[in-house]
Length: 492
Image 1 (cartoon, helix red, strand yellow):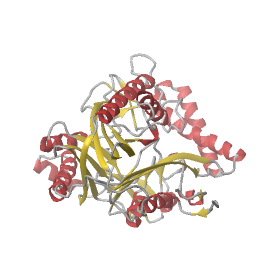
Image 2: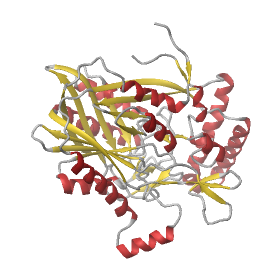
Image 3: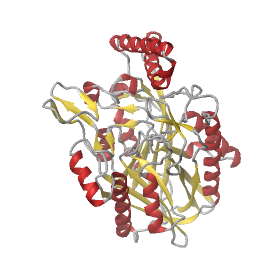
Image 4: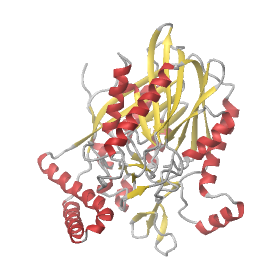
């Protein structure tokens, strides 16, 4: 077979996956679907450091529990297994590579012959969950100067997390039985694009719109709520996968453990469909989205006061309502014999290159911040992440001098389930990329799941031009220059 070299845009790597899945398959169509589901508690022991802000936060209180929702799928032709997909959604900021590998190894040890690459873990991007990365993690994004005593350490929480997720996967796998599935989509306005653009071309996340320099909002908003329903053999609804293009960041600056809007969404859906329902929450492409309003804030605050419904109530109600309405429409269109194809691939994407100016500025900020910490150690909790954030850019520039085209290794998954497609990526993928994937997919309905891995923003070209957090080099491993990605072979 000849190896084909194609020069294609980064976003196209995901589109190619989806287009591939929608081609005629050589597999037997009409395989029986087996389904298992489980939910496990992943709430940490207190006190614990929280992840997602630039300053250290230590939580001493649990506002809502953290959960991992798990659904295991297998198709069989008689007694012969055809393919498998296990989805694990965690109330975490994202998934560290080290933790994911530990889960896979633990499951493979418990289930001889099982392929751990069939396990997909994703975070919901809550900023009120525990720190899951430290200096032992490959491609870590945020480090904190966590006290060594009287605070749950990252390694301690990770051990608990891996144990709980492994237990949940085994429970779902061992409990699988013949079942059925269906899917649907409904529009519900949840996210706002959070990047504000000014007349000089600059941009800012959560920027001020009440100025004559305000030009507009930078990008599109995706209001699809995609739902995937699973029933057991007796016709009982056991799990729902819910795909919303919005990070769970309604209370992102809080100092308490909180699953954010996914907790009330779960509670509402359990109240409607039964307490044993397993909700698997999937964040769609939403690197430039937020559940918090960017303008008309005063008007919305007035409405909240008059209605007695705060923004958390509003967001969770909108999601739950969309899932329930969709359910009523599609519940009689059940698919029992169905095609399942799960493809996994590790790819290398070109890292965003660091310019000389970016290197000089990052080195200056890093040195100044380090000096501030040395002069006043009380500031270290506020400045530690900032210092290491800029240190990383200095190191990347030095690597570039030795390796002119450094690569970032990442994994993607692509699943075909009947007429729908599901694809994953590790990034906080900007919404325009998600729209490109869904708009050009030949699947009847397409689910895009981000943060299936160690997250970092993947901005559009126009976002990089505007600058600001989420689009500057410190925020990205990979940027729009990923269009230089060379796809060396077609998937077969």
